[in-house]
Image (spheres, one colour):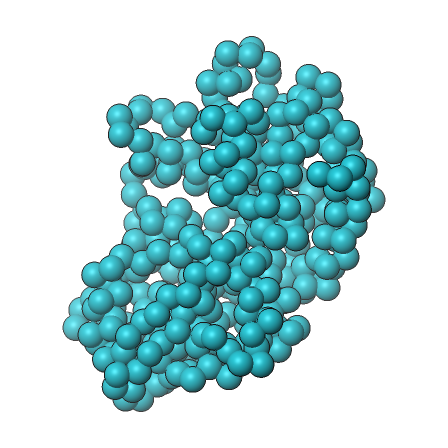
Length: 338
């Protein structure tokens, strides 16, 4: 079958004969999406039924993975990223991954097979800024000034992967003390904190009827705005605000769940996610860049400015520091009772 040629062959050689009538349980964040015909072809090829278990934002998903490790609810997990995988590994929730399944591609993710990557950064509402005649901020510190009071909404890093990513970028760029001093000033200047990306983008962002014209989102979000618009505008209604210290490169991947019932089938599914057919589907389905080489992007990505630089700590630093960072952020930003 030509649908998933090379990587599926590798997976089948690793896994041997696939179990018949088996159920593969896939734990994923709420944004996970695979084209139904592709998923049906995978089920037909393996003889298995795939059950997708969506567990909210990636941060919530990892917490659920860890809380259920004594009696695993999944065989494979998708949506672990470089800000969260260390937490899952330290908790002993993951099983070792065969090196063949993680080999190749433009990005890597220690402990998992990289499937896609993207950039967490600030987006702004073009119409709001045009109407207000307020110049765009040029630095993060500008956002602490009176002119930008009550304009920014971010996600809580304790419950949101983009929120954690954005916090991590500020710390990597500025150092801990200067970064938390910045966060204190942002709080005093009317910063709003939402639970997750969905609430921040679709409720608080002015583009969608909220009051905040600057939001922590993704570099691909302007392209998604055009793609889903009924009138297909020539220009995106939003754009990236790539301020120094505001860009985090997020690498997402799939990993084996320790104690999963179907480890061989799980390996085949990971190979499936890295196949050409699925990789081509990712950019306009999950709005991330494909991890594998030589995968074309939809033309709509001309509206998504890809950052030339980013401030991303390595996975080891994130694993070692993020709990303390989130605790300190909570004390600094939420102490006013938000």
